[in-house]
Image 1: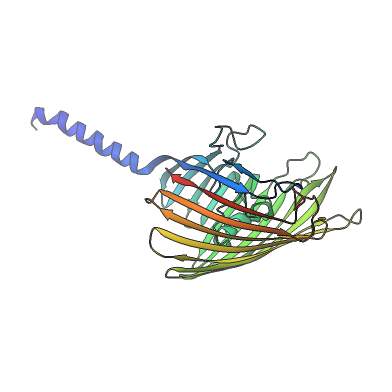
Image 2 (image 1 turned 180 degrees about the vertical axis):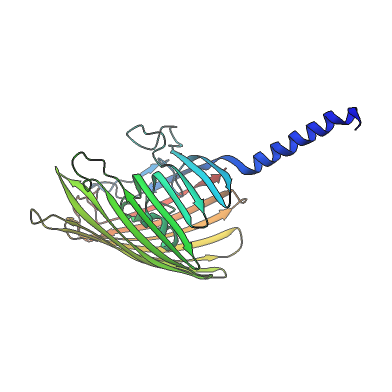
Length: 342
């Protein structure tokens, strides 16, 4: 062999090995930066209005993600996700506890049998509502589904996801980590979805133990929904029921959310979405709330868009309560901003 060719061959082999290692291991940094301005009427009993820049993103939450995956061979992969939320207007974290990866932090394995993840992660109900909500969980500070999705995220959670033909099964268990009790503070759930070409439909159920005062109570959560898309038209909606058993110490609580809407893509750049959301509560003094919202998205590129929305909220009773923080009969809001995914 020509001695002068040896260094070239060695360098080529090292390059090939490096490329193979790169193909097997991947780490990515990505996220969303969302900034907007919102004007809202009737923010207090005097009927005053206010204009604010916002907090953690209007159209979608501001977040910074670190994700990685490694191919282990035989179709098996390891992966992780660390997700931080932040306030674009101030640069602060999006939570009051100073938790850096408050949004998600989990590690897992994925293979032909499905995937299992351990850590802080979205609940099954969140996974499913993402498909059924006309706005696909955008405008979360405005639309009531975030508060109604049985926690949105569970800490200390083990979740299984498996695809079987056109069906998806999800199971999860969140450990309560309360001394002397395996059930206190815990949560368990199951969900099943049909994943068709044009139609997605399914439901989920979970029970979690929540602290009411100084006592843990059982909360039961049910969700059913569907989404259909054909060409430029999309239709979706669902129904949610959340109950807390007070075991005779007080009236049981029952919160219901019914929602639905449609979207139409005029072009690849321009999309119009409208939705209606009704919330009722058996124990809230306001009794119920109706929300109508219309949003327009204009994409400047695959990663950047401008958005404009208008919404109207109306309460059954004009009283300060959990549902009606301002204690008014109605509010009208308009929001506009820019959303960039990186």
